[in-house]
Image (tube, rainbow, N blue to C red; front, side, top):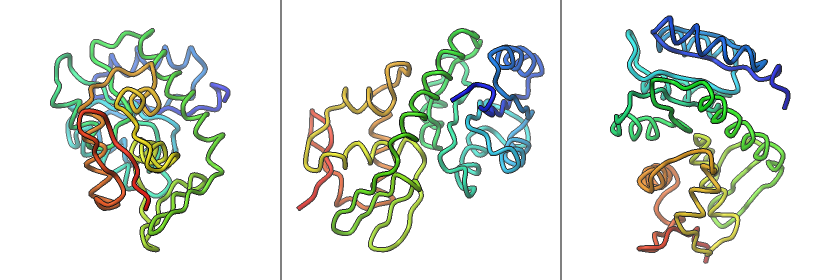
Length: 229
């Protein structure tokens, strides 16, 4: 995937952040679009159809959490990569971000080398997912369509945010196999992302809310498995 074909939407209410981060992204060859608040981010995302959105949390008019939720609800943007900018040590913001559907976060002040490395890691996983999305997993009561990024539960189609979808695909790839937390973190979030085990719990909870409790079983002290009779 050539950088010049990658569209990135940069959203922050601080002009300095837009200028400095935008400069480094442009230098890497990415196509950069900018917005200064959440409302602009949502409207711009509809038009731009970006591959990646870099989204500040604390912004006027509409904060990043609400903007992320609205973007995830737009047709065709359910799986866009979203990375939040958060203030250092704001654990509650990071958890809220993941619950809203974020793929990752980076703390301010933003270090360009760290940001660019994180972006490259996310895009590598995106490319890997895209190259393997021609599979359909079908079980009693549930079908997982990797090609079109949707799940059907008893004939009802459900669209999941990217990380929830990746997590479900991993568990369903080997039914009844117990995946430990370390494997889940490495496979779904990768080596370039540092997240805690609570992140897995948040995504599992949201998955269960959408597909029901029957398919995913918790193995205490170990991890999770996708249950098939």
